[in-house]
Length: 224
Image (cartoon, one colour):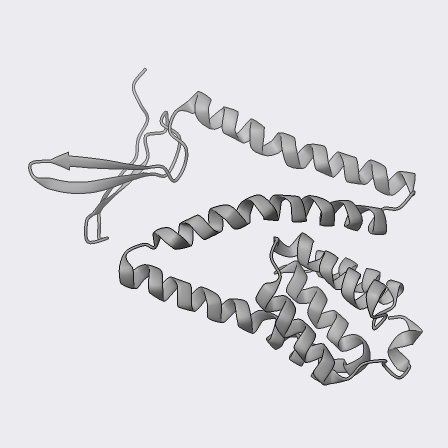
Protein backbone atom coordinates (compact mmCIF):
# COMPACT_ATOMS: atom_id res chain seq x y z
CA UNK A 1 0.00 0.00 0.00
CA UNK A 2 1.13 3.59 -0.63
CA UNK A 3 2.63 5.69 2.14
CA UNK A 4 -0.49 7.89 2.07
CA UNK A 5 -2.16 5.16 4.13
CA UNK A 6 -0.05 6.27 7.11
CA UNK A 7 -0.86 9.98 6.79
CA UNK A 8 -3.84 11.72 8.37
CA UNK A 9 -6.90 11.40 6.10
CA UNK A 10 -8.59 14.53 4.76
CA UNK A 11 -12.03 13.13 5.51
CA UNK A 12 -13.88 11.54 8.40
CA UNK A 13 -15.24 8.05 8.67
CA UNK A 14 -18.75 9.52 8.69
CA UNK A 15 -18.09 11.25 5.37
CA UNK A 16 -16.92 7.96 3.87
CA UNK A 17 -20.01 6.21 5.29
CA UNK A 18 -22.41 8.73 3.73
CA UNK A 19 -20.59 8.64 0.40
CA UNK A 20 -20.77 4.84 0.18
CA UNK A 21 -24.45 4.91 1.18
CA UNK A 22 -25.20 7.41 -1.57
CA UNK A 23 -23.20 5.52 -4.18
CA UNK A 24 -24.81 2.22 -3.20
CA UNK A 25 -28.26 3.80 -3.45
CA UNK A 26 -28.03 5.88 -6.61
CA UNK A 27 -25.09 4.35 -8.48
CA UNK A 28 -26.20 2.60 -11.69
CA UNK A 29 -24.29 0.96 -14.51
CA UNK A 30 -22.70 -2.10 -12.95
CA UNK A 31 -19.18 -2.59 -11.55
CA UNK A 32 -17.32 -0.79 -14.35
CA UNK A 33 -19.41 2.35 -13.93
CA UNK A 34 -19.25 2.23 -10.12
CA UNK A 35 -15.47 1.96 -9.95
CA UNK A 36 -15.37 4.88 -12.38
CA UNK A 37 -17.55 6.93 -10.04
CA UNK A 38 -15.20 6.12 -7.16
CA UNK A 39 -12.21 7.35 -9.13
CA UNK A 40 -13.98 10.53 -10.20
CA UNK A 41 -15.31 11.35 -6.73
CA UNK A 42 -12.64 10.09 -4.34
CA UNK A 43 -9.48 10.61 -6.40
CA UNK A 44 -10.14 13.45 -8.82
CA UNK A 45 -12.68 15.68 -7.06
CA UNK A 46 -12.28 15.17 -3.33
CA UNK A 47 -8.67 13.91 -3.25
CA UNK A 48 -9.48 11.54 -0.40
CA UNK A 49 -7.61 8.66 -2.05
CA UNK A 50 -4.34 8.85 -4.00
CA UNK A 51 -4.07 7.61 -7.57
CA UNK A 52 -1.61 4.93 -6.50
CA UNK A 53 -3.84 3.59 -3.73
CA UNK A 54 -6.79 3.51 -6.12
CA UNK A 55 -4.85 1.55 -8.76
CA UNK A 56 -3.59 -0.92 -6.16
CA UNK A 57 -7.11 -1.43 -4.83
CA UNK A 58 -8.52 -1.87 -8.33
CA UNK A 59 -5.86 -4.45 -9.21
CA UNK A 60 -6.54 -6.44 -6.03
CA UNK A 61 -10.31 -6.25 -6.54
CA UNK A 62 -9.96 -7.56 -10.10
CA UNK A 63 -7.81 -10.47 -8.93
CA UNK A 64 -10.24 -11.57 -6.23
CA UNK A 65 -13.50 -13.45 -6.87
CA UNK A 66 -16.70 -11.61 -6.14
CA UNK A 67 -18.19 -8.18 -6.89
CA UNK A 68 -15.56 -5.77 -8.22
CA UNK A 69 -17.06 -2.49 -7.05
CA UNK A 70 -17.86 -3.71 -3.54
CA UNK A 71 -14.34 -5.06 -3.06
CA UNK A 72 -12.78 -1.82 -4.29
CA UNK A 73 -14.99 0.15 -1.91
CA UNK A 74 -13.88 -2.08 0.97
CA UNK A 75 -10.23 -1.56 0.05
CA UNK A 76 -10.63 2.21 -0.18
CA UNK A 77 -12.22 2.19 3.27
CA UNK A 78 -9.22 0.26 4.55
CA UNK A 79 -6.66 2.73 3.17
CA UNK A 80 -6.99 5.24 6.02
CA UNK A 81 -9.30 3.61 8.55
CA UNK A 82 -8.12 0.01 8.35
CA UNK A 83 -10.53 -2.77 9.39
CA UNK A 84 -13.18 -0.42 10.77
CA UNK A 85 -13.14 1.65 7.59
CA UNK A 86 -13.30 -1.42 5.39
CA UNK A 87 -16.25 -2.80 7.38
CA UNK A 88 -18.16 0.48 7.32
CA UNK A 89 -17.51 1.05 3.61
CA UNK A 90 -18.51 -2.50 2.67
CA UNK A 91 -21.76 -2.52 4.65
CA UNK A 92 -22.76 1.00 3.56
CA UNK A 93 -22.13 0.20 -0.08
CA UNK A 94 -23.93 -3.16 -0.20
CA UNK A 95 -26.84 -2.53 2.19
CA UNK A 96 -28.95 -0.19 -0.03
CA UNK A 97 -28.94 -2.50 -3.04
CA UNK A 98 -29.61 -5.51 -0.80
CA UNK A 99 -32.71 -3.84 0.65
CA UNK A 100 -33.88 -2.76 -2.82
CA UNK A 101 -33.57 -6.27 -4.24
CA UNK A 102 -35.42 -7.78 -1.27
CA UNK A 103 -38.23 -5.21 -1.57
CA UNK A 104 -38.57 -5.53 -5.35
CA UNK A 105 -38.41 -9.32 -5.15
CA UNK A 106 -41.16 -9.38 -2.53
CA UNK A 107 -43.34 -7.02 -4.58
CA UNK A 108 -42.75 -8.99 -7.78
CA UNK A 109 -43.63 -12.28 -6.14
CA UNK A 110 -46.58 -10.82 -4.23
CA UNK A 111 -48.27 -9.22 -7.23
CA UNK A 112 -47.23 -11.72 -9.92
CA UNK A 113 -45.07 -9.33 -11.93
CA UNK A 114 -45.01 -5.54 -12.11
CA UNK A 115 -45.31 -3.91 -15.52
CA UNK A 116 -44.07 -0.54 -14.29
CA UNK A 117 -40.94 -2.17 -12.88
CA UNK A 118 -40.14 -3.71 -16.26
CA UNK A 119 -40.72 -0.34 -17.96
CA UNK A 120 -38.34 1.39 -15.54
CA UNK A 121 -35.64 -1.23 -16.09
CA UNK A 122 -35.96 -0.92 -19.87
CA UNK A 123 -35.56 2.85 -19.62
CA UNK A 124 -32.62 2.68 -17.25
CA UNK A 125 -30.95 0.02 -19.43
CA UNK A 126 -30.59 2.43 -22.34
CA UNK A 127 -28.83 5.01 -20.16
CA UNK A 128 -26.67 2.37 -18.49
CA UNK A 129 -25.14 1.37 -21.84
CA UNK A 130 -23.74 4.88 -22.27
CA UNK A 131 -22.56 5.03 -18.65
CA UNK A 132 -20.71 1.73 -18.98
CA UNK A 133 -19.08 2.82 -22.26
CA UNK A 134 -17.80 6.08 -20.76
CA UNK A 135 -16.58 4.40 -17.58
CA UNK A 136 -14.86 1.61 -19.51
CA UNK A 137 -13.05 4.19 -21.66
CA UNK A 138 -11.81 6.16 -18.65
CA UNK A 139 -10.89 3.00 -16.75
CA UNK A 140 -8.90 1.69 -19.72
CA UNK A 141 -6.96 4.95 -20.02
CA UNK A 142 -6.16 4.94 -16.32
CA UNK A 143 -5.07 1.31 -16.00
CA UNK A 144 -3.51 0.59 -19.42
CA UNK A 145 -2.16 4.03 -20.29
CA UNK A 146 0.47 4.02 -23.04
CA UNK A 147 2.12 0.71 -22.14
CA UNK A 148 2.28 -1.36 -25.35
CA UNK A 149 2.49 -4.69 -23.52
CA UNK A 150 -0.63 -3.92 -21.50
CA UNK A 151 -2.44 -2.86 -24.69
CA UNK A 152 -1.49 -6.15 -26.37
CA UNK A 153 -2.81 -8.13 -23.39
CA UNK A 154 -5.95 -5.96 -23.28
CA UNK A 155 -6.75 -6.43 -26.98
CA UNK A 156 -6.08 -10.17 -26.82
CA UNK A 157 -8.45 -10.60 -23.87
CA UNK A 158 -11.06 -8.42 -25.58
CA UNK A 159 -10.97 -10.59 -28.72
CA UNK A 160 -11.21 -13.81 -26.68
CA UNK A 161 -14.11 -12.38 -24.66
CA UNK A 162 -16.04 -11.59 -27.84
CA UNK A 163 -15.13 -14.64 -29.94
CA UNK A 164 -15.62 -17.38 -27.32
CA UNK A 165 -19.36 -16.76 -26.63
CA UNK A 166 -20.06 -16.40 -30.36
CA UNK A 167 -18.37 -19.72 -31.08
CA UNK A 168 -20.27 -21.39 -28.22
CA UNK A 169 -23.56 -20.12 -29.66
CA UNK A 170 -22.67 -21.44 -33.10
CA UNK A 171 -21.81 -24.85 -31.65
CA UNK A 172 -25.11 -24.98 -29.74
CA UNK A 173 -27.09 -24.12 -32.85
CA UNK A 174 -25.22 -26.75 -34.83
CA UNK A 175 -26.03 -29.47 -32.28
CA UNK A 176 -29.64 -28.47 -31.71
CA UNK A 177 -31.10 -27.58 -28.34
CA UNK A 178 -28.76 -25.80 -25.92
CA UNK A 179 -28.07 -26.81 -22.33
CA UNK A 180 -30.69 -25.47 -19.94
CA UNK A 181 -33.41 -25.05 -22.56
CA UNK A 182 -36.88 -25.82 -21.18
CA UNK A 183 -39.61 -27.44 -23.25
CA UNK A 184 -43.22 -27.67 -22.04
CA UNK A 185 -44.87 -31.01 -22.73
CA UNK A 186 -48.53 -31.94 -22.27
CA UNK A 187 -49.80 -35.52 -22.52
CA UNK A 188 -52.94 -37.19 -21.15
CA UNK A 189 -53.92 -34.03 -19.32
CA UNK A 190 -50.58 -33.89 -17.46
CA UNK A 191 -48.12 -31.03 -17.94
CA UNK A 192 -44.44 -31.56 -17.45
CA UNK A 193 -41.25 -29.72 -18.37
CA UNK A 194 -38.20 -31.23 -20.07
CA UNK A 195 -34.93 -29.49 -19.17
CA UNK A 196 -32.10 -30.18 -21.61
CA UNK A 197 -28.94 -31.36 -19.86
CA UNK A 198 -26.95 -31.77 -23.08
CA UNK A 199 -27.15 -31.11 -26.78
CA UNK A 200 -29.87 -32.77 -28.82
CA UNK A 201 -27.57 -35.45 -30.23
CA UNK A 202 -26.85 -36.58 -26.66
CA UNK A 203 -30.60 -36.67 -25.84
CA UNK A 204 -30.27 -35.94 -22.13
CA UNK A 205 -33.31 -34.56 -20.34
CA UNK A 206 -34.59 -33.95 -16.83
CA UNK A 207 -38.39 -34.29 -16.57
CA UNK A 208 -40.10 -32.06 -13.97
CA UNK A 209 -43.80 -31.86 -13.12
CA UNK A 210 -45.75 -28.65 -12.41
CA UNK A 211 -45.01 -28.91 -8.71
CA UNK A 212 -41.26 -28.80 -9.35
CA UNK A 213 -40.70 -32.48 -8.54
CA UNK A 214 -38.31 -34.49 -10.68
CA UNK A 215 -40.21 -37.23 -12.52
CA UNK A 216 -37.38 -38.98 -14.33
CA UNK A 217 -34.20 -38.49 -16.28
CA UNK A 218 -33.79 -39.54 -19.85
CA UNK A 219 -30.29 -40.05 -21.30
CA UNK A 220 -29.06 -41.79 -24.38
CA UNK A 221 -27.74 -41.40 -27.89
CA UNK A 222 -30.01 -40.54 -30.79
CA UNK A 223 -30.19 -43.05 -33.59
CA UNK A 224 -28.76 -41.69 -36.82
